[in-house]
Image 1 (tube, helix red, strand yellow):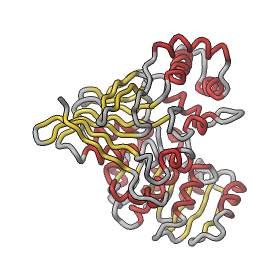
Image 2 (spheres, rainbow, N blue to C red; image 1 turned 90 degrees about the vertical axis):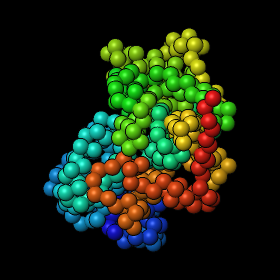
Image 3 (cartoon, rainbow, N blue to C red; image 1 turned 45 degrees about the vertical axis):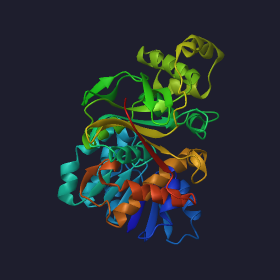
Image 4 (cartoon, one colour; image 1 turned 135 degrees about the vertical axis):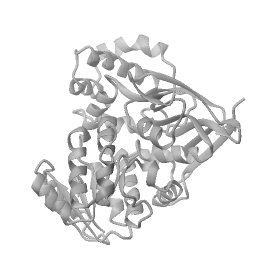
Length: 400
């Protein structure tokens, strides 16, 4: 297949291309970015790749140019954000041109919007997978593996690391050195206002940064905190939990307290998301001091694993807890995977694409990853990228 990598002059898109250029079934890759010179610079890094990699300037707001670029390829990897501005635009154009589509959208609102294009995609024979990154993406597929251990699902939680030991530098990649990154601004958006979660099997609006106490197999206990990612929305559709579902951050009390202070200031209109991201990137002593009392009252992650899906439910009439997590001893450990968040997000995008290329996941419609991606194969492929076996551990224990 011929592949268009939109926004691949950025770190996550370039990481996706790095993996995609080594996959069977890829005939050619075109890196397209609004910054044509940056796209060309990335393309030059793949001069010795198995498949030809070229570049072109492309602004996704130029509808005729976007349509023309899509008509020249079979599949598009969309890493152009923010997705609330560009997700539906690119996906709609891909459907119109009959181009298969994958992205790394981690906004719950555009995820719902894009899932609403399912009928159009089915009619056009287009397979679109929304949120094929780390979280969502890897997280959804861990949840799918855990759900396979149950007959019915009660609660479903996915979680990703911020600054806990073994998290691999996730917070550093969000903050940046001098200026707040786009990811930091996005983090503020996900940490303020209202987010979507699932309560008693129904999608509801809640405030973010709510504590969720977890008891998991293997004697693991701790508290994680809600954040505005799409997983509860898509898992409610695919796994149909009858209890609660949320996406969580595994975070230390000091960072959570600082985020809570920023959330209150955003919600009160004292800070914009951009100003809050600046405060996050370059904390002031005054704000740190203000957050200390909250930090002292905040429960920590205990011995929770840094990246996991935790489900509860029934199997053969008995209630169980199931934990699916990444094994720190396989493929260099979680530090190796999450030490570079661009790679941790871009690599899954390319591995998901490989299942569309060979037909394994090529089902018309708009889907979250867990609905069409073969999870055992995905994790076997992920392990091979790091020179090891499948990095997933699944633990199940009865309740009571």
